[in-house]
Length: 317
Ligand code: ASP
Image (cartoon, rainbow, N blue to C red):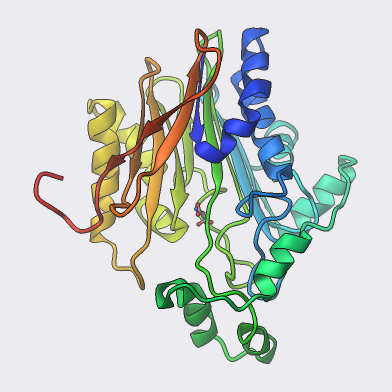
């Protein structure tokens, strides 16, 4: 039994471990870990209180995958519903589809009896409306989006929303007592994104992939890169082709070096192999980035440093 996740998911570990200890499924554990993160008002990268798009609307993406059957469910650009991970799970279990977008996902959530909620918390609104600039680098998303459009509504909002580069996501990989894997990802995506922008988190293969036979991987960071390189699936495929976990994850990170990008981004992943060995990787060189894990014998989760693979090649990396 195992949970491996981005550090902000620690909040849900007790619920997830309880399910696993009781003999519950990896899928149930993944959903149970992610739901409290989606409700956390202090986490501005996921669910309620996530930071909004450039027009001040919170739009959420999420996906879940079953490593036993390779079934998957996802939703993207969902407004007004706090738990996109649960909508994604129901898409997987009830529909002959993998992904629902925007209004369709909201309609399905409504049909399932899920409650609508205003997802823009006062704090998130204050951040959106503030104009505090730490560094010119933090303005990038605003600049790129505003440069790309002449829409007057967007142009007007660009003048007053917050300057910080804001991103984040939660992801978790679980193995249950029966040895089945599941993985889930949930995010409010990049703050100040263009309305309707969808990142890697709900894209199976890009931000999330899981296969009992080889292992699982989930990403956080600049989703456009993981979408272009199919990062999560690459890690699993490299393991299928015979690479050990660390090598497979490192190779998928190095694949990102071929991509041209409009600004220096960050990419992170967590990955687990078929035997339950786990790693975390990051491209970030100027700060320590951790992930969190818990096995069946551990009473509390433990944090571990992610290995660094810089986006620009450096000696020995
Ligand atoms: N990967 C997410 C996205 O691109 C954001 C993040 O993880 O920071 O939407």
